[in-house]
Length: 201
Image (tube, rainbow, N blue to C red; front, side, top):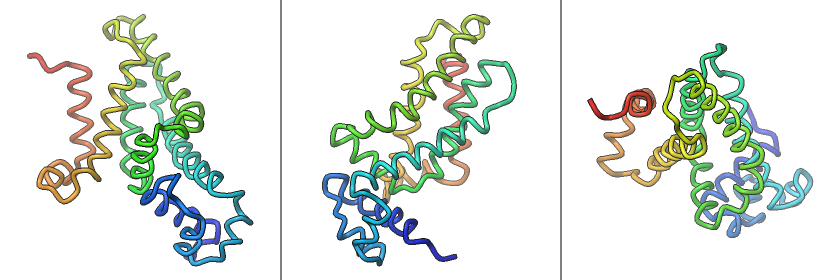
């Protein structure tokens, strides 16, 4: 199935921004990567920033929609806490690694677009869901008196970093050991064991 010109532009932009970041990305190179006329990019998008924001919105919006659409349909807040984390992991490891590279470059450059686009549109709504579930689980006496914001970033930050290690450790023996077979399920099992039961016997 052949891609539309807009899809070719998005794909080429992902590759360009993954390699050069937003500031180093160039429209002429994107056009060359996509195999289209440069004017076609401006026909579909206003410019480089619009392309970059579209990539951030599309990918992170898809993550949010996946989580919301697949959350467990019950009233147990602990199931909801674990469900949000589990679904986040499932989807994140299906994301194009070029997007992960874009995020690493975004963080290295101060994360302005993370603050302006990703946090208000995706991160904060997920934090709100997560915090509400934590509050209910605490009221029910299911969990300790944990801080929901710290817990969110400790959980989800570790998942994001683990995903980034697929790039950072590429070509090493530890990469082959960590990311073999059903590594997602093994990672989830280990994470939830630590989170729900701790490491002490």
